[in-house]
Length: 181
Image (cartoon, rainbow, N blue to C red; front, top):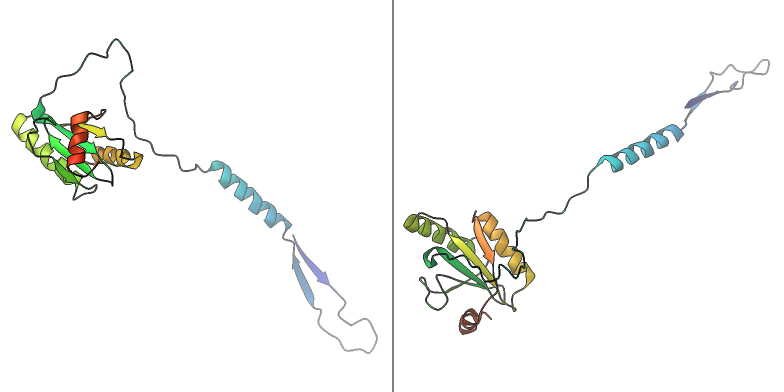
């Protein structure tokens, strides 16, 4: 704790001058250091570290018994998104062989694929009365970041029905034709 040292201050001889006593103070820092380490330990043990953020993604089982079952969906309410190379996306409504809207090459972002998804979703909702279904088809030239980015776009644009499907040969040819493969 605190300690006061008191000396005689030079008044021990006869006939000497009388001086006032000087007191020196010394603060013992040991309890404060102990308290500091206790507080550091307390806050380290009670804080939560940043948890990784993950998106829930439900994928179908790989059962052989359900392999031939497919859900028929109208071409007028499906938007197919093809992930190509160089961070480019090609999208169309309908089938690759007979698209309802012309295949369009876009970038990621709010003025790219997000704008197209929002516009087409409104058009499909107005014409069919049902929500749009987005089919995501990554090519072997696309990277993992592109897949995560398009899944983020699905969350941002509030698309409730989307699927990740293997790309087929006509769609690869479409990507090659437009220089995105």
